[in-house]
Length: 143
Image (cartoon, rainbow, N blue to C red; front, top):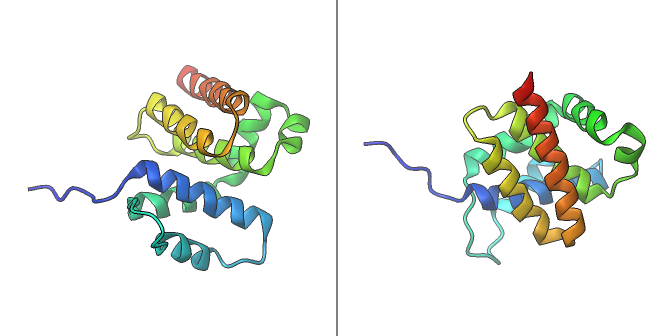
């Protein structure tokens, strides 16, 4: 019998967004403390897939340069640098998942980041994220 992982990948994505957002605003904050605080939050009944949460954050941080390079190709470097931090963080997580999580469908990843972004952003910004992630997924599929 296969042990099914308890916890939601969707909620893991939301928490990963919060973690990387906190890190981008405060470079001196300890990553492990941020992760622990988010995972131990008793305010919500949502349960993350802890393994997925750690893998997503670590892969995004490890591959930030490559992920940002992909984004700068699609968005143009000047525009990317001017984007709000929360938008950049969501895009980085989404691109990381599209590129490095081969076991996940691009369509599912894009859909999930549309949901994540709708928790933090307005409809136009959600559309922007959808368009950028879709373009990156198509570029990767075409390669």
